[in-house]
Structure formats: C-alpha cells, structure tokens
Image 1: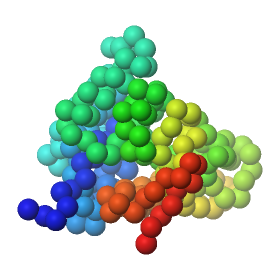
Image 2: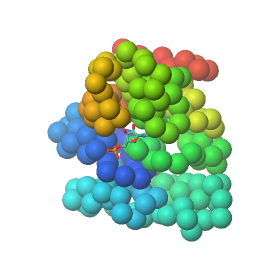
Image 3: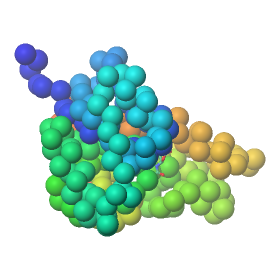
Length: 206
Ligand code: GAR
C-alpha cells in the first residue's frame, strides 16, 4: 500500500477536454499523485468523454436538460461524485454555474479554471472581453469555487501577453497552453496538502 492513497478527482467537462488531457498526462507520468475517479459531462457529444474512455476512465453523460433546475441537477451530480468517492472536483471547461448544493457538498474542494486574470473579465467570452477592453496582459486563473460566478479564492494565476493582432482564437490558444500547466500545478499542490484557505486568501505551503 502506498503511504498516501492517491487523491480521487472528479472532472466535470462540457467540451474538448484539453485541460482534462493535460491532467491525465501528468497523472500517467507520475507528476501528480491522483486518480481520476470519473469524468462527467453535461454534453453527450463532448470530446472530453472520448479522451476519458481512451484512458480507461469512467466517462459519464449527465445532461442538465433532463433536470428542471440547477439545484436538482447539482444534487444528482453530487450523488454521482460521492458514488465515485471523489475528494476533489475539477471544473475543466464545465460551462455551467454551480449552485450552493455543489459548493456546500465539497467545501474548498472544487477548482475551476478561468481564461482571464480574475477578478477581470468573469463569465463567458473572457478572452474577447480582454481584447475589447484593450489590456496588454491577460492569462488564466485557477480558483476554488464559491456561490458566485468566478469569484472564489484564487489559487494560481499565469500571465499571458496580448498581441496587437490577436483574435479571440489566437489569444484563447495562448491562454489555453498556460492553463494546462497552471491547472496541473494547482491540483498537485492540493494533492500534496499544500493549500490552506484563509477567507479570500489562499496560502501555499512549502
Ligand atoms: C478553457 O479555456 C477554460 O478556461 C474555459 O473553457 C475552456 C475549456 O477547454 N472555461 C471557461 O470559460 C469557464 N468559465 P478544454 O475543454 O479544452 O479544457
């Protein structure tokens, strides 16, 4: 038996799953001591499901359209996560706002990646918001999820430059490659027990 059982991750997705892939790769290389217990998608056609299946990870379609409202959907998600004995929930391109039902079920144990330097440009189309505003730098933020939209305590951020000729696509691509190592670094810190939350502030232990 290993000294510490690997942290069990539940990854929620809606789309392509490049962040999921980055996490899978780092677990398989031994960089992160974790196991992906399940991947749950609210979209049946999310390519992230294929990525999970290719690596022998349970891939679950859990469509929100089958639930009357957000809280009942979240209650069913919590049940799924609990049935897979998940320790840490990862929102990896999960394009839904989660409610208090999820947040209270996993206190300081839900991480989201957002494609901007929060608190700037929360919500949808963060990259286009940054271009429209004319900022010189944007980036990505990994934060714990609270009941607001992209408002929870910030764990890690990576800065990415904005070029004059950037489009939403080119800026998104540059931010996305920063996301992959930033998300992995935050998950690694969590699995090593090196994160403490004090109100809004996240302390990273050596
Ligand atoms: C990522 O860029 C992530 O920051 C964004 O969705 C993309 C998912 O890509 N998330 C949000 O905008 C959440 N508000 P992926 O499916 O290839 O990992």
